[in-house]
Structure formats: C-alpha cells, structure tokens
Image (cartoon, rainbow, N blue to C red; front, top):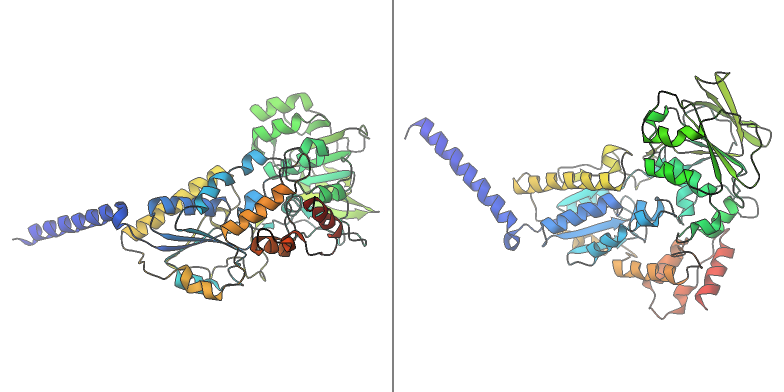
Length: 476
C-alpha cells in the first residue's frame, strides 16, 4: 500500500470513528451522562437547562439560584403589569418536574460555594447570571440629588427582597414626586413611564407591591419627561410598547424632536403628538403629561432648592440647552456587572475549559426573552459539539460532591410552597402578593404544610405594616 493510499484509508477510518461516536451520542440508551451546573435561573439559564435535558435525558442538571425563588429576570425584572410575558415560567415549571433536573435555590455561587469548587465538581458549568446593576449615568451629579436606577425601581415594585430605595426617617419609602424625568427610551424606560402613569385599578391582574407603590407614588405624577439621546429612528423601544403607552386613558403624550423626515411605524404613531418642549406649562391636574424628547443629551444633574435640575443639550428649539426641573430622575440606560466587592458576580477568573457563558452576561444587555432563547440554543450547540468531539471529557461527580457543604437549599417543591402561599394571600385584583422578606420565604419553604410558623413573617425595618397585613389576611 502506498503512503498516499494509506493516508486516505486512515482519514476514512477516522471519519468513520467520528461518525460512529456521534451516532452513539444520538442514541439515548448510550448517550453521555454529564453533570451540569447552571448558575442562574432566569430565562437564559432555564432555556440552557431545557435544551440540554432534551439532548441528554440521562444527564444530571442542577440550576443554582441565589434567591429562594426561581426565574430571576422574569420574577423581578419584567414589569409587574406584563403578566403575559411572565407566563413563560409555566414552561420552565415543567423543566423542574422532570427527572434529572434539580432546582437549588438560596445558594449563592461565590459565597455559599466557591466558583472553583463548582467547576471542579461538575463536567459542565454554564453561567447565566445576567447583569444585575443599573448602568450609571456618566454626567456630573451633585451630591444628594434624587437619581434612581430603573432596575432598582422595577425590582422593588416587583417585590424584590433587596430594596435600595431611599427612606424617610419614619421608615416609609420616599415618594418620587409629581414631576419625573426618565433618561433612556428603551422598553425599560417605557415600562417605568407606563407604571408611573397608571391608577391602581389599571394594575388589575398584576403582582405589584401595592404598599410600596402607594408610598413611592401616592398619586399619578403631573408630568414625566423622557430623554433620548438618539433620534426617533434609533429609539430602542418596541412599537407595541409605544402603542400601549399612547392608549393609557389618563395620559397626554407630546413628542419633541421628531423630524418631518422621520418615517416608520413609530413616526406615524407619534406624528399627531408632535409639539414643543414647554416644560414650564402646568398640566391638567387629573392627567399625566408625558413628553418624549428625542436628540437630547443629559449634561448635568444638580440641586435647585428642594428639587432636581436636569440640564441637557439639544440641536432643536430656540436654545441649545434645555433645563428640566423635576422631583426625581430615573435612569434607564442599560445594565452592567455588579460591584467589584460582590463575590457572587462572575469575574474574568470564573473561566475554564468546561465553563460557558450565556445571555446578557455573554453578549451584553441586548434583546428580550426570544433573543435569550436563541443564544441559549447557540451555547448548547457548542457544548454538545465539545462533548461529542471529545474536546470536553465527562465523568465528574456533580451535585453529590457539593451537597454536604450547602445549607438551607430550597428545592423546587419548596419553592412551590412559597408560590402557593403568595397566591393564597393575594389581595383583590392581584394574582399574588410576593413575600419580600427572605427569612419568611425560607420559613414557608421548609416548614410543614400545616405549620402555623410559616405564616408568621419576620419583621424588618419599615416592613412591619405590610407584614402585619399579610399575617392578618393569611389567618382569615
């Protein structure tokens, strides 16, 4: 046999072996059984777990979540009045009731267990922690002004246990005021404007934190100025979000900075609302005047008496500088990594041959749930290729290796107790009342089903009234 013939034969044999290997992996009875850790139970993490469980039914998948409750962004990020979007959790519920998939709630990777230990014990680690912090507005800001991130605000209204909003001396949350400015013009900004512009009865079917909502916004604001650096064609909101805002019964919308040359669905919707930026005009007391400012760039935020002054530059109008006097500024300009001292946020050291990233953590804060699903599919295809080609070896112990070192792990069945309790104590017009105290969550999750202790919340500063009302309703 010549060298050329031998080389061809060897290549054919190698190809046949690889083909046989792939066929073996595609046969469920002989499929690999990797141990997989997914860190983060938001949409990206759940989609990764779903696709991997379907590909390898005999695998062991553990989804770690720092909160006692699953679903991350869906539970605490999507606006409380968009329950249709939140219903994606119903398909994720099915994931956690199948064999081989475990929910490990109340486990913070980085503090409860070191990332290096996790990566050593599992064949595959997928980081799906998202971007937990509001991106800061990089303009000069005077100390003591009222600037709040949209994620912080929406998370609080969604009942997140960690609330960083300012409080009054009496423990109540400080009201946002009658005049608001929102910096940003994406979907999150529109979420803020819509929620701030609704009356309580317009939130029927939601799971908003009613007590917090009443403290932050006792009445609808008289005006909301929404600031976009870009022109209308580059605005990042979905057209459906704009339609929903324009349909609100107690809102008047004015669009400033829309060009006659602008076209498309958004321009057609806003053309009847084109006006000028007269921010000093007093709106009708019974309505909220929303002004959408395009091509306006924030320059500074300072104090003006007991209010906040937002200065911005603009290429249109009679002056190149516009000043907007408000009570609070809410920033909605994207998301970023957690603080450096937060050991639960992935760093560059959270890496390895068996470590993968997915969702916003991987590609930045772009796209909604459908885009996260596509990205999860892409990452899973990469993982499968690495296993099937032998690039990634499997055989590590998995959850059994880390379980002895973990404390107070919340299972999916225990989460369902929390969910059932929240639904049971929901006030009229609400689909649930979320528990905002972490220890109360854990007491419900771990107590016997007929135990009265699970109904008794632990009291935290400023939460007494809400918790007493919760206890009263749960005892009825």
